[in-house]
Length: 383
Ligand SMILES: Nc1ncnc2c1ncn2[C@@H]1O[C@H](COP(=O)(O)OP(=O)(O)OP(=O)(O)O)[C@@H](O)[C@H]1O
Ligand SMILES: [Mg+2]
Image (cartoon, rainbow, N blue to C red; front, side, top):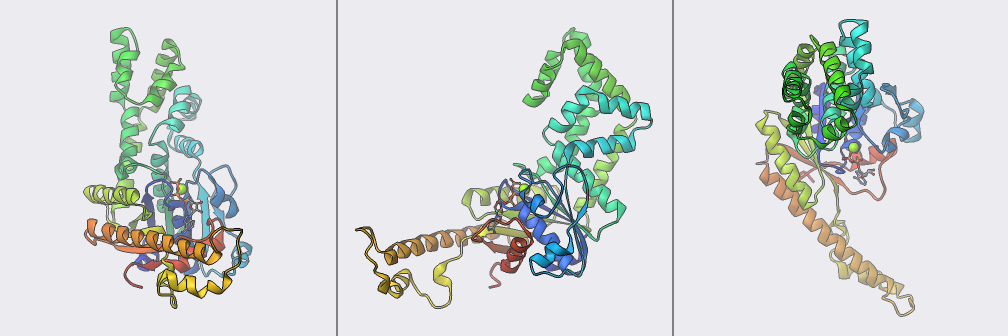
């Protein structure tokens, strides 16, 4: 299932709760496609930048960077396609957009230097989601890659991600301007109508302006932005069409943690409601049951096998007993994980295939690690 997706789709979007492994999985999927001959780009939003750094990406800028042969060679890999990666720089993406679509150099400069634009474009909730979608749309349109894999920022709701463009655009719309300015002018003060925006970030940002400054900034921004709103809106619509269309696939990433599984189930329902088709689920960092390995049958067996190691241990439990405890605990965790995977499968009505990635002994932050993830990934129930 996942193989077919990576072979045939043009856009793969990895969504899921915070910290479950979206960045890791996104990079791994792009690597798989590259190994199989496609020219794949992973667009990552990795604030820690550890993966980015180890892939050799510069820490700043919006540059598409090819992962060099030497990095593949170091991991013992020989790709038949190409792997490209890029970290999304929020500020640069916004500025690039304004530069591209401003109707004149003057309007462009006005917007880029507008303090309100500077504060809101990078600070507003949803801005990162919006720019990620814009970037995917632009990359797909330009057609330079066979596949673009998008690593999404951690959002609590899938719909936050999908609706971010509209919510932000509404803020930039003329109605909003009239509302804000009109309210401010009418009431003789700005505070009242802004409270209704309901975002503490907006309020905090706006508090840094004096009343007059704010009105000037607002007015200047909305005048300069005039005529650009429709274009932004059209692209947001086209992007949503691209993402819900046949060229794209959503991959829902989760951990087997019960709370995260709840969130993933919720995500799956939300995506379905907005007519987004989930092509595959990936349960990452699953505990492997040591008792299901070939050879061992139960924890006491393992302890017995180790029993000749009864090295005196200053009165503390023998190593073999401590190992038995560890094996038992791991086994309990693995059974819990198994139940959670089953619950995820049932709660989503088996609508998509689940793939399992075991919890690896070490963090994943280079090609060798990503390859290990791919090698260890298997379909749930498929053995
Ligand atoms: N299967 C795995 N085994 C071991 N470590 C893993 C595995 N998958 C991911 N990790 C590690 O877990 C950490 C979190 O992974 P990652 O950054 O990919 O999550 P994320 O969902 O992108 O997080 P965020 O929501 O903060 O962006 C990283 O340190 C990564 O190396
Ligand atoms: Mg991430």
